[in-house]
Image (cartoon, rainbow, N blue to C red):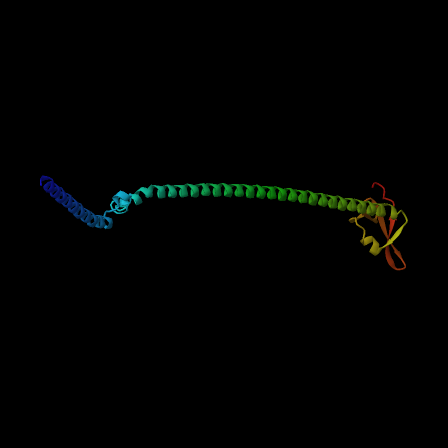
Length: 204
């Protein structure tokens, strides 16, 4: 009889425990569903999606320094590119200045050569003109000196065309005409006035 009662008690306890377990399981499922929607999945390692640093923007703020580093790197790259451009420009300016100086030096040399050649040419022409003048003067002098010898008669036109300046000199009532070292006296030939080369009068 006692064994029967204890069996009933034990069976009731087992049923009660089973019922409590079922109730607890149901409640757990209900609570688990709500937690899955709100902050659930904590055991799955995904709670940071809403309540973790990502939901508060901490992830973005943690990424900001990397963006700044990227901006700094970009600025450094720009600065390097600017320095390289400046160096390139300076090299280009230096080369241009050198080319201009070389061109100016070559132009100056060419100008000096041209000036020297022009001066030499002018000097040669001047010497040539001078030599021609000397030859002409000598020829005229020889013509005036030796062409008209004593006794030679020249026409009035020829006498007037002599290169020397004639002056009249009266010696003992005779009029002579002096042209440098030559002396002339007036005469007539065929009714025309002529001039005859004579010796210098006494005292001259």
